[in-house]
Length: 113
Image (cartoon, rainbow, N blue to C red; front, side, top):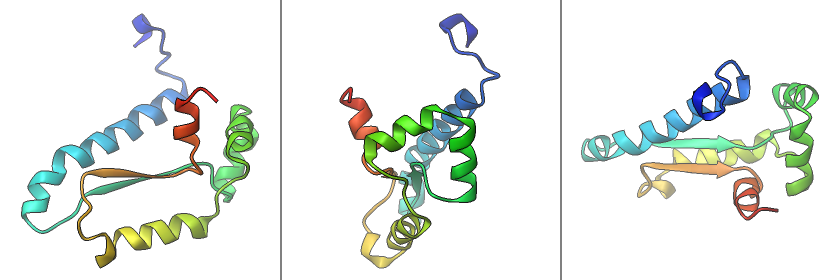
């Protein structure tokens, strides 16, 4: 990783790689589990107003920019509502997807905002 300018000991790198691994695992395993009647999904919350989210905000100044971009932190209730939907029959035709609950951060950041 260092050869391409990535510091493996950086916690942000470890988090990003592990999240990517979860997303890829969901996509890769979804087809075989779908045939068995199961749905495989991953959920990616943004900065959420929880003790952990607030600790991360205090230790990672770049998180302030994320909040400024979307306008606020998310709430645990907003993430819970999406999770409840994903496990309900209303989402019965969903599988192999990563569901973002990030206030649009990934979309906005991808547009260079």
